[in-house]
Length: 193
Image 1 (cartoon, rainbow, N blue to C red):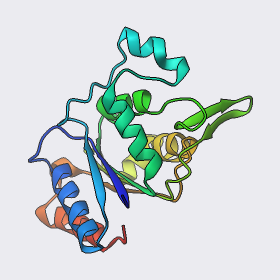
Image 2 (image 1 turned 30 degrees about the horizontal axis):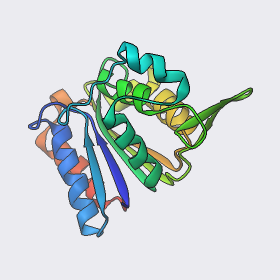
Image 3 (image 1 turned 90 degrees about the horizontal axis):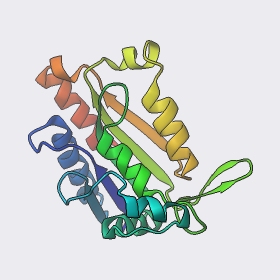
Image 4 (image 1 turned 45 degrees about the horizontal axis):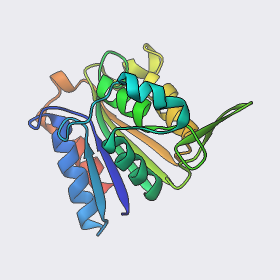
């Protein structure tokens, strides 16, 4: 596998779905083999039940999707996230994915040391984050604290060991023109994923 796509949007007529299709076409044109984690489609449950919580500190899980997704993350050199940016953060489904799949322990996603978290996913050499937001991108950056870049991209993903992180956002999606949307998709098509 050359790449792992983590897609988080429940509606297949959304612009995020168009982004997914565009990314898949880009990968196919570059002859890259990829796997897709569609968080809404395959029954992933983003919350801990009692048994999952009991197993948390052992680095184990009883959820077969967690095992599968973590093994894929440990195999891939590239990860692409496609998600909307809702209420100044990533959707609960994606947050739940990070919470449940990123297991602590040697050889898992990270280890906790006296000085902080040490990421184990250093095999991920390239990370792309494609988002859409109702707020314009400049507003996210200047007035809302740039949470996606500051927290999700430069803290969470970095702590997990994911390298070479790039964030692309189409802001003002609700009022955007067809031309603006097409321009964003063309930009994605030109990225050497």
